[in-house]
Image (tube, rainbow, N blue to C red; front, top):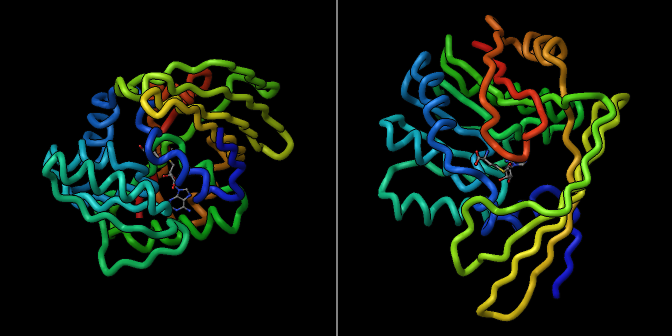
Length: 257
Ligand SMILES: C[S@@+](CC[C@H](N)C(=O)[O-])C[C@H]1O[C@@H](n2cnc3c(N)ncnc32)[C@H](O)[C@@H]1O
């Protein structure tokens, strides 16, 4: 058994790249949602923190010109394989969403699956928003999928979690999840263990990691976006697309350049 306690977010996602898609349900409704929103702005779109590019691929299949960016090289490798298999065209960019520079402007940029919550302090948040703003065309839109917890005393101790889409040779993939929220710091601390039992290799790999997510009220994120220069800020209520957000109230905030 291999035990790893990774130090930073890139390492955590490097270890999760091969299995992360197993934990998402079928994503057609989610892709339809992003397509509908993107259509309001145009066809050149930028998927920030794209992971394995599942949503990016769905949007490319619908005819959008998609650029997909992620920090983690291992995620990009998985995305490359999927893009080749699906025979779609997507520009993949392996960069940090807080610091990237491209010679291109987009009609619409978005962050799915609550990934904006990874930016914990104001410096990271502002740096990300400045980059997103700078890469939008005038009147372009930025959309962030965010969530709020059902109550301030939120705790979760979930021992088992059925993977939703694991292929047969990885049938024994499961994870445990312990989460607790501190309403003073607005940080949700998540401790997870991920087990991958590759039967044919006769071994169980265990990955342990901790993630801190910074949560926002609608008022707070509205103010933050305004300060970053965004206008016409609005909120769109959405279905809970990902099981991770199960107990939460999920919405998308949209701001325009
Ligand atoms: C949950 S996964 C992404 C799932 C993806 N949004 C989707 O819809 O399938 C979170 C991703 O955020 C990426 N990430 C974390 N911090 C980042 C940063 N500073 N810049 C770019 N990507 C980042 C990780 O590498 C990881 O792939």
